[in-house]
Length: 249
Image (cartoon, rainbow, N blue to C red):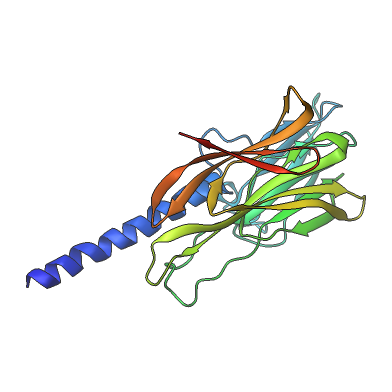
């Protein structure tokens, strides 16, 4: 009986470990959490609001992400764009100089446990929307994406992460992460750089400067393996897209 007691107590622990990392993934890479920004303003004052499926429980657009543009004087809706797919979560929006709104949409993580053969997910996408029309959508390389960040030379920066079990039956770990730099070409996008950041849960990019560089991009990563942290890494990406790793301890 003692052996069975161990199994009974171990199995809930595995479930809780998988669930807690899944929730962590939602908070970092897609699911809106308390305090996350869902509003942006354009150069002309237009207010852009992202509404997530959790806020849209009724009507024909049930379960879909929606982007609204509001007049800053009257607060009336100028236009709106509604995502066709259901059960995705949107990042905070950012607005380009020409009024294009960029946002990422990521998987909700609301599916079976990692050892369930039916478990599957969709890759995240970076969307470019202008005047209520989708200009282009770029499919990223993982189901979770950070909010986009506007960089110099019209570039758009984003990080991605993927999750999956280390071995059956889990627990979950971040299998890989990437940094991407893209350019808006009007009706499509071009990838300027794609960097492999390794097995880390990564932050959204931050554009900054260094004494010897006009601009750099900072990303932080938390190492994961069997559910235990392996330390913090600061990734520094230069204008030539060379990658420097700094261990922070």
